[in-house]
Image (tube, rainbow, N blue to C red; front, side):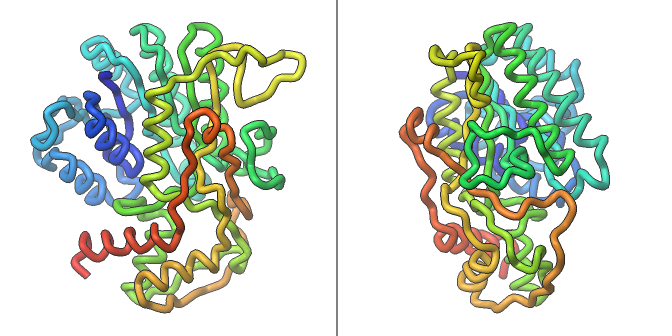
Amino acid sequence: MKILVTGTAGFIGHFTALRLLAMGHSVVGLDNINDYYDVNLKYGRLAEAGFAREQVQPGQLVQSVKHANYQFIQASLEDRETLNGLFTEHKFDAVCNLAAQAGVRYSLENPHAYIDANVFGFMNILEACRHNGVKNLSFASSSSVYGLNETMPFSTSHNVDHPVSLYAATKKSNELMAHTYAHLYGIQCTGLRFFTVYGPWGRPDMAPFIFTKAAFNGDTIKVFNHGNMQRDFTYIDDIVEGVVRVIENPCHANPNWSGKTPSPDSSSAPYKIYNIGNNNTVKLMDFIQAVEAATGVEINKEFLPIQPGDVVATYADVSDLERDMDYKPNTSVQEGMRRTVAWYRNFYNI
Protein backbone atom coordinates (compact mmCIF):
# COMPACT_ATOMS: atom_id res chain seq x y z
CA MET A 1 0.00 0.00 0.00
CA LYS A 2 0.92 3.65 -0.30
CA ILE A 3 0.37 5.10 3.15
CA LEU A 4 0.40 8.65 4.51
CA VAL A 5 1.77 8.67 8.06
CA THR A 6 1.51 12.02 9.83
CA GLY A 7 3.79 12.88 12.74
CA THR A 8 6.84 11.05 11.37
CA ALA A 9 9.35 13.39 13.03
CA GLY A 10 7.60 12.37 16.24
CA PHE A 11 8.21 9.34 18.41
CA ILE A 12 5.48 6.88 17.40
CA GLY A 13 5.25 8.15 13.82
CA HIS A 14 8.98 7.63 13.23
CA PHE A 15 8.93 3.98 14.23
CA THR A 16 5.60 3.30 12.51
CA ALA A 17 6.95 4.57 9.20
CA LEU A 18 10.10 2.47 9.47
CA ARG A 19 8.10 -0.64 10.31
CA LEU A 20 5.71 -0.12 7.37
CA LEU A 21 8.69 0.30 5.03
CA ALA A 22 10.21 -2.93 6.34
CA MET A 23 6.91 -4.65 5.54
CA GLY A 24 7.12 -3.51 1.91
CA HIS A 25 4.74 -0.54 1.96
CA SER A 26 5.46 2.89 0.48
CA VAL A 27 5.28 5.78 2.95
CA VAL A 28 4.86 9.53 2.69
CA GLY A 29 5.63 11.13 6.04
CA LEU A 30 4.40 14.51 7.22
CA ASP A 31 5.32 16.61 10.25
CA ASN A 32 5.43 20.33 11.03
CA ILE A 33 8.51 19.89 13.30
CA ASN A 34 7.14 22.31 15.89
CA ASP A 35 9.18 23.35 18.92
CA TYR A 36 6.93 21.88 21.63
CA TYR A 37 10.07 19.94 22.61
CA ASP A 38 13.69 19.90 21.41
CA VAL A 39 13.64 19.94 17.60
CA ASN A 40 17.11 18.36 17.55
CA LEU A 41 15.47 15.12 18.62
CA LYS A 42 12.94 15.42 15.78
CA TYR A 43 15.65 16.12 13.21
CA GLY A 44 17.62 13.24 14.71
CA ARG A 45 14.73 10.85 14.03
CA LEU A 46 14.44 12.16 10.49
CA ALA A 47 18.18 11.70 9.95
CA GLU A 48 17.86 8.13 11.22
CA ALA A 49 15.23 7.62 8.49
CA GLY A 50 17.43 9.13 5.77
CA PHE A 51 16.41 12.81 5.71
CA ALA A 52 19.27 15.25 6.39
CA ARG A 53 18.34 18.37 8.35
CA GLU A 54 19.44 20.74 5.59
CA GLN A 55 17.38 18.73 3.09
CA VAL A 56 14.10 19.32 4.96
CA GLN A 57 12.32 22.52 3.90
CA PRO A 58 8.72 23.63 4.55
CA GLY A 59 6.31 22.48 1.85
CA GLN A 60 8.87 20.47 -0.12
CA LEU A 61 8.56 16.72 -0.60
CA VAL A 62 12.00 15.13 -0.14
CA GLN A 63 13.32 11.62 -0.73
CA SER A 64 14.98 9.43 1.93
CA VAL A 65 18.55 8.40 1.08
CA LYS A 66 18.06 5.18 3.10
CA HIS A 67 14.63 4.02 1.92
CA ALA A 68 13.57 4.13 -1.74
CA ASN A 69 9.88 4.05 -0.79
CA TYR A 70 9.97 6.85 1.81
CA GLN A 71 9.30 10.54 1.17
CA PHE A 72 8.78 13.32 3.72
CA ILE A 73 7.21 16.77 3.72
CA GLN A 74 7.37 19.43 6.42
CA ALA A 75 3.82 20.74 6.75
CA SER A 76 1.05 21.25 9.30
CA LEU A 77 -2.30 19.49 9.35
CA GLU A 78 -3.84 22.96 9.49
CA ASP A 79 -2.36 23.71 6.03
CA ARG A 80 -5.36 22.53 4.06
CA GLU A 81 -3.97 23.48 0.66
CA THR A 82 -0.75 21.50 1.06
CA LEU A 83 -2.60 18.55 2.55
CA ASN A 84 -5.13 18.43 -0.28
CA GLY A 85 -2.37 18.66 -2.88
CA LEU A 86 -0.58 15.75 -1.25
CA PHE A 87 -3.72 13.58 -1.33
CA THR A 88 -4.49 14.51 -4.93
CA GLU A 89 -0.96 13.69 -6.10
CA HIS A 90 -0.34 10.45 -4.22
CA LYS A 91 -3.69 8.63 -4.18
CA PHE A 92 -3.08 7.04 -0.78
CA ASP A 93 -4.43 3.59 0.01
CA ALA A 94 -4.39 4.29 3.73
CA VAL A 95 -3.78 7.13 6.18
CA CYS A 96 -2.38 6.82 9.69
CA ASN A 97 -2.77 10.10 11.59
CA LEU A 98 -0.27 10.24 14.44
CA ALA A 99 0.39 14.00 14.30
CA ALA A 100 -1.05 16.05 17.15
CA GLN A 101 -0.26 18.69 19.68
CA ALA A 102 0.74 16.42 22.53
CA GLY A 103 0.99 16.86 26.30
CA VAL A 104 -1.55 17.17 29.08
CA ARG A 105 0.02 19.93 31.20
CA TYR A 106 0.93 22.11 28.21
CA SER A 107 -2.76 22.18 27.25
CA LEU A 108 -3.34 24.29 30.38
CA GLU A 109 -0.88 26.91 29.08
CA ASN A 110 -1.60 26.94 25.34
CA PRO A 111 -5.10 25.61 24.70
CA HIS A 112 -5.48 27.10 21.21
CA ALA A 113 -2.60 24.94 19.90
CA TYR A 114 -4.67 21.85 20.70
CA ILE A 115 -7.77 23.04 18.89
CA ASP A 116 -5.71 24.11 15.86
CA ALA A 117 -3.75 20.86 15.45
CA ASN A 118 -6.02 18.24 16.97
CA VAL A 119 -9.45 19.46 15.88
CA PHE A 120 -8.98 21.67 12.80
CA GLY A 121 -6.08 19.50 11.62
CA PHE A 122 -8.00 16.26 12.04
CA MET A 123 -10.96 17.82 10.23
CA ASN A 124 -8.66 18.43 7.27
CA ILE A 125 -7.50 14.80 7.34
CA LEU A 126 -11.10 13.55 7.33
CA GLU A 127 -12.10 15.85 4.48
CA ALA A 128 -9.03 14.88 2.44
CA CYS A 129 -9.86 11.20 2.91
CA ARG A 130 -13.50 11.83 1.94
CA HIS A 131 -12.70 13.71 -1.27
CA ASN A 132 -9.88 11.42 -2.40
CA GLY A 133 -11.51 8.04 -1.89
CA VAL A 134 -9.35 6.95 1.08
CA LYS A 135 -11.36 4.35 2.99
CA ASN A 136 -8.68 3.15 5.45
CA LEU A 137 -7.99 5.66 8.26
CA SER A 138 -6.34 4.90 11.58
CA PHE A 139 -5.64 7.64 14.10
CA ALA A 140 -4.09 8.25 17.49
CA SER A 141 -6.36 8.77 20.43
CA SER A 142 -5.17 8.59 24.04
CA SER A 143 -5.72 6.86 27.36
CA SER A 144 -6.30 10.36 28.76
CA VAL A 145 -9.88 10.23 27.39
CA TYR A 146 -10.81 8.01 30.35
CA GLY A 147 -10.54 11.08 32.60
CA LEU A 148 -12.41 10.66 35.87
CA ASN A 149 -13.21 6.99 35.21
CA GLU A 150 -11.94 4.89 38.13
CA THR A 151 -13.03 1.45 36.88
CA MET A 152 -9.92 -0.63 36.18
CA PRO A 153 -8.80 -1.82 33.73
CA PHE A 154 -10.00 0.86 31.31
CA SER A 155 -12.21 -0.71 28.67
CA THR A 156 -13.24 0.74 25.32
CA SER A 157 -16.81 -0.12 26.35
CA HIS A 158 -16.58 2.40 29.22
CA ASN A 159 -18.09 5.88 29.09
CA VAL A 160 -15.46 8.58 28.37
CA ASP A 161 -17.52 11.73 28.84
CA HIS A 162 -15.51 13.18 31.72
CA PRO A 163 -12.07 14.29 30.45
CA VAL A 164 -9.89 16.34 32.82
CA SER A 165 -7.68 18.11 30.25
CA LEU A 166 -8.30 19.90 26.99
CA TYR A 167 -5.84 17.50 25.34
CA ALA A 168 -8.10 14.60 26.34
CA ALA A 169 -11.17 16.49 25.13
CA THR A 170 -9.60 17.00 21.69
CA LYS A 171 -8.80 13.29 21.45
CA LYS A 172 -12.37 12.38 22.38
CA SER A 173 -13.56 14.84 19.73
CA ASN A 174 -11.39 13.03 17.14
CA GLU A 175 -13.19 9.79 17.94
CA LEU A 176 -16.59 11.47 17.53
CA MET A 177 -15.58 13.18 14.29
CA ALA A 178 -14.22 9.91 12.89
CA HIS A 179 -17.46 8.10 13.69
CA THR A 180 -19.41 10.76 11.81
CA TYR A 181 -17.29 10.26 8.68
CA ALA A 182 -17.48 6.48 9.01
CA HIS A 183 -21.28 6.76 9.16
CA LEU A 184 -21.71 9.34 6.39
CA TYR A 185 -19.02 8.33 3.91
CA GLY A 186 -18.07 4.73 4.73
CA ILE A 187 -14.50 5.59 5.73
CA GLN A 188 -13.11 2.72 7.84
CA CYS A 189 -11.99 4.64 10.93
CA THR A 190 -9.98 2.97 13.70
CA GLY A 191 -8.96 4.96 16.78
CA LEU A 192 -6.06 3.83 18.95
CA ARG A 193 -5.91 4.85 22.60
CA PHE A 194 -2.21 4.78 23.48
CA PHE A 195 -1.08 4.21 27.06
CA THR A 196 2.11 6.03 28.25
CA VAL A 197 4.44 5.14 25.38
CA TYR A 198 8.20 5.05 26.03
CA GLY A 199 11.40 3.75 24.47
CA PRO A 200 14.44 4.86 22.41
CA TRP A 201 13.93 8.23 20.68
CA GLY A 202 11.11 8.87 23.16
CA ARG A 203 9.57 12.24 23.98
CA PRO A 204 11.62 14.37 26.40
CA ASP A 205 8.47 15.71 28.08
CA MET A 206 7.51 12.21 29.27
CA ALA A 207 8.48 10.70 32.63
CA PRO A 208 10.77 7.89 31.30
CA PHE A 209 12.96 10.42 29.47
CA ILE A 210 12.82 12.99 32.30
CA PHE A 211 13.80 10.38 34.89
CA THR A 212 16.65 9.03 32.77
CA LYS A 213 18.01 12.51 32.14
CA ALA A 214 17.79 13.34 35.84
CA ALA A 215 19.68 10.17 36.77
CA PHE A 216 22.65 11.06 34.56
CA ASN A 217 22.60 14.81 35.34
CA GLY A 218 22.14 14.45 39.08
CA ASP A 219 18.86 16.40 38.94
CA THR A 220 15.86 16.07 41.25
CA ILE A 221 12.66 14.68 39.74
CA LYS A 222 9.16 15.81 40.69
CA VAL A 223 7.09 12.88 41.91
CA PHE A 224 3.46 13.94 41.74
CA ASN A 225 0.66 12.77 44.03
CA HIS A 226 3.47 11.81 46.41
CA GLY A 227 4.24 8.80 44.24
CA ASN A 228 0.74 7.35 44.46
CA MET A 229 0.32 7.11 40.69
CA GLN A 230 0.04 4.12 38.39
CA ARG A 231 0.61 3.97 34.65
CA ASP A 232 0.28 1.31 31.97
CA PHE A 233 3.76 1.97 30.51
CA THR A 234 3.88 0.59 26.96
CA TYR A 235 7.11 0.02 25.03
CA ILE A 236 7.33 1.59 21.57
CA ASP A 237 7.77 -1.70 19.67
CA ASP A 238 4.55 -3.02 21.22
CA ILE A 239 2.67 0.13 20.20
CA VAL A 240 3.95 0.00 16.61
CA GLU A 241 3.02 -3.67 16.27
CA GLY A 242 -0.54 -2.81 17.19
CA VAL A 243 -0.64 0.17 14.82
CA VAL A 244 0.57 -1.73 11.75
CA ARG A 245 -1.84 -4.61 12.40
CA VAL A 246 -4.71 -2.14 12.47
CA ILE A 247 -3.52 -0.48 9.24
CA GLU A 248 -3.36 -3.84 7.47
CA ASN A 249 -6.71 -4.96 8.92
CA PRO A 250 -9.11 -2.00 8.64
CA CYS A 251 -12.28 -2.25 10.70
CA HIS A 252 -15.76 -3.10 9.50
CA ALA A 253 -19.26 -2.36 10.72
CA ASN A 254 -20.29 -4.43 13.72
CA PRO A 255 -23.30 -6.54 12.61
CA ASN A 256 -24.31 -7.05 16.25
CA TRP A 257 -24.29 -3.36 17.17
CA SER A 258 -27.61 -2.01 18.36
CA GLY A 259 -28.76 1.58 18.71
CA LYS A 260 -30.93 0.45 21.63
CA THR A 261 -27.88 -0.65 23.63
CA PRO A 262 -25.11 1.30 21.86
CA SER A 263 -21.59 0.21 22.73
CA PRO A 264 -19.21 3.20 22.30
CA ASP A 265 -16.28 1.23 20.85
CA SER A 266 -17.92 0.06 17.59
CA SER A 267 -20.88 0.90 15.41
CA SER A 268 -23.22 0.01 12.59
CA ALA A 269 -20.71 2.13 10.63
CA PRO A 270 -17.12 0.91 9.92
CA TYR A 271 -15.71 2.32 13.16
CA LYS A 272 -13.68 0.80 16.01
CA ILE A 273 -11.73 1.97 19.04
CA TYR A 274 -8.88 -0.06 20.56
CA ASN A 275 -6.70 0.36 23.62
CA ILE A 276 -3.00 -0.30 23.02
CA GLY A 277 -1.36 -0.73 26.41
CA ASN A 278 0.75 -3.25 28.25
CA ASN A 279 -2.31 -4.53 30.17
CA ASN A 280 -0.22 -4.22 33.33
CA THR A 281 -0.41 -1.11 35.48
CA VAL A 282 2.87 -0.19 37.22
CA LYS A 283 3.25 1.87 40.39
CA LEU A 284 5.19 5.07 39.71
CA MET A 285 7.75 4.27 42.43
CA ASP A 286 8.33 0.83 40.89
CA PHE A 287 8.92 2.45 37.51
CA ILE A 288 11.41 4.86 39.03
CA GLN A 289 13.21 1.83 40.50
CA ALA A 290 13.37 0.31 36.99
CA VAL A 291 15.00 3.52 35.73
CA GLU A 292 17.44 3.48 38.63
CA ALA A 293 18.32 -0.16 37.91
CA ALA A 294 18.91 0.58 34.21
CA THR A 295 21.03 3.68 34.87
CA GLY A 296 22.77 2.43 38.01
CA VAL A 297 21.92 5.73 39.74
CA GLU A 298 19.64 6.52 42.67
CA ILE A 299 17.56 9.52 41.60
CA ASN A 300 16.86 12.51 43.86
CA LYS A 301 13.11 12.92 44.38
CA GLU A 302 10.78 15.76 45.37
CA PHE A 303 7.31 14.58 46.34
CA LEU A 304 4.48 16.91 45.30
CA PRO A 305 0.63 16.96 45.12
CA ILE A 306 -1.16 15.79 41.98
CA GLN A 307 -1.16 18.29 39.10
CA PRO A 308 -4.28 19.67 37.37
CA GLY A 309 -5.21 17.51 34.39
CA ASP A 310 -3.44 14.40 35.69
CA VAL A 311 -5.22 11.11 36.34
CA VAL A 312 -4.16 8.89 39.22
CA ALA A 313 -3.98 5.62 37.31
CA THR A 314 -4.19 4.10 33.83
CA TYR A 315 -4.60 0.42 33.01
CA ALA A 316 -5.58 -0.91 29.59
CA ASP A 317 -8.02 -3.69 28.84
CA VAL A 318 -6.70 -4.96 25.49
CA SER A 319 -8.97 -8.00 25.16
CA ASP A 320 -10.57 -6.81 21.91
CA LEU A 321 -7.15 -6.04 20.37
CA GLU A 322 -6.06 -9.55 21.34
CA ARG A 323 -9.28 -11.03 19.92
CA ASP A 324 -9.35 -9.10 16.63
CA MET A 325 -5.62 -8.74 15.89
CA ASP A 326 -4.24 -11.79 17.71
CA TYR A 327 -1.86 -9.47 19.52
CA LYS A 328 -1.10 -8.32 23.04
CA PRO A 329 1.79 -6.04 24.14
CA ASN A 330 4.16 -7.77 26.55
CA THR A 331 7.49 -5.92 27.02
CA SER A 332 8.30 -5.48 30.73
CA VAL A 333 9.28 -2.05 32.05
CA GLN A 334 12.62 -3.50 33.19
CA GLU A 335 13.49 -4.66 29.67
CA GLY A 336 12.00 -1.57 28.04
CA MET A 337 13.98 0.81 30.24
CA ARG A 338 17.18 -1.18 29.71
CA ARG A 339 16.84 -0.60 25.95
CA THR A 340 15.80 3.02 26.45
CA VAL A 341 18.77 3.84 28.67
CA ALA A 342 21.16 2.11 26.23
CA TRP A 343 19.85 4.39 23.45
CA TYR A 344 20.09 7.46 25.71
CA ARG A 345 23.72 6.72 26.55
CA ASN A 346 24.56 6.35 22.86
CA PHE A 347 22.61 9.42 21.64
CA TYR A 348 24.00 11.74 24.32
CA ASN A 349 27.49 10.16 24.42
CA ILE A 350 27.34 9.21 28.10
